[in-house]
Length: 68
Image (cartoon, rainbow, N blue to C red; front, top):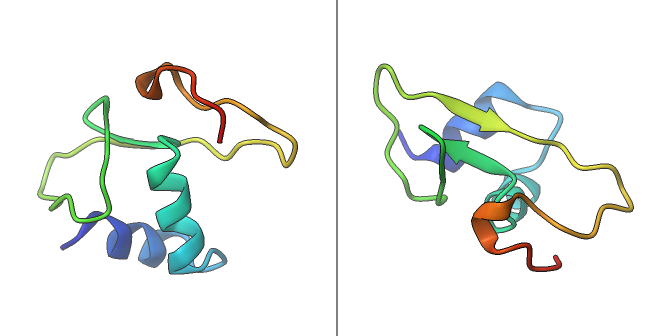
């Protein structure tokens, strides 16, 4: 299953578009690596999702600290 679809199934209160924006902003990791929407998930994968405060400007260091 695609990573973005799996996240939407886990967090039905979030839209798929919003989840994809979190993925693009490096707020989500798969096995400690920045994930991509098309990343296939399998058994044993570890997923980390960080929900930033509404006024947050920077993402995890995986993106080089770029502003989002």
